[in-house]
Length: 135
Figure 1 (cartoon, rainbow, N blue to C red):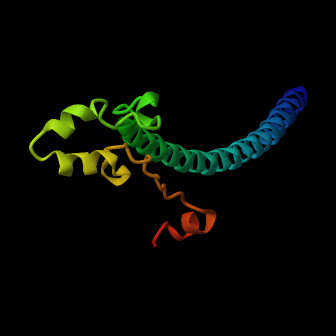
Figure 2: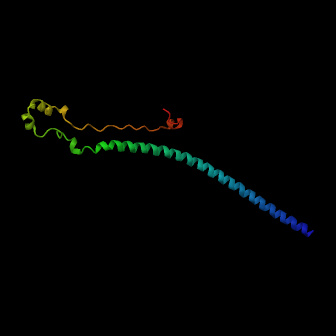
Figure 3: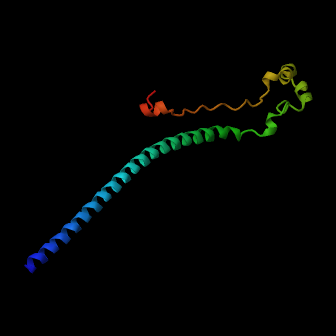
């Protein structure tokens, strides 16, 4: 009988080990499901970050393109009377002096730089993003 008792004790130990393995497997399954849920939310957040980064990329490109024209003029170019001819006597002595004098005095004929253009940037709204941005 001792052999049967020994075998029974070994089987009970093995059963306890199997129960512990099952409990630990269930805990591992719960942890992996939690990680899966976290990865899904991270994936969704990454998509939002990509949209934001694409919007900022478009903004930076637009600002860069518009700032190229800013390099053409300095602050003094926007001062009053900066673009008018400085020597009006030479203009009056010219053959067509009357025409050129009228042009020099006419403020509409000055080559004053125009104000910088406004840049419009399309930014996706939440409703556009859910529809796939189809507009």
